[in-house]
Image 1 (cartoon, rainbow, N blue to C red):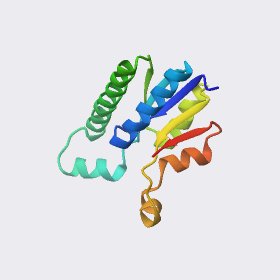
Image 2: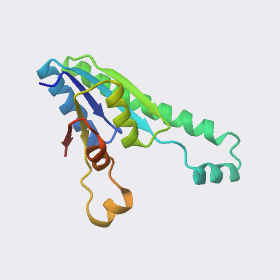
Image 3: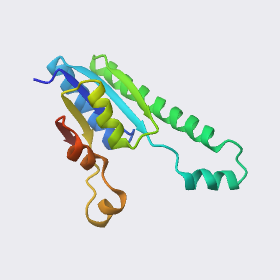
Length: 148
């Protein structure tokens, strides 16, 4: 059925469950697995505030911090894959809105399923915070499996 699965994570506890589920599914189906972390582009307001407080290279520090965070999340996913007994490719997409980066990675890797978590926010929190999962489901031509 599915031969190439993309698993999106942000390193949260809920996303870790999606990683576990997606990798287990890939193993069961003998499918290829790719785990992706997408880090957003720096926000002008945040960089300006850091610069005003005396930080000399705020963008560089932001990018280094995001890369370090992504590496930790991906290392954890790779460890989970090893525990399950499956190989997985790991990908860090930089400077993209998360939903956009997930969809673009799914397209470039020619996957036939995206697995990701949803935080299940409702009401005003959903409106204010948005939902990466909702954006992916709404805009991706690839089927999406949501783990709650």
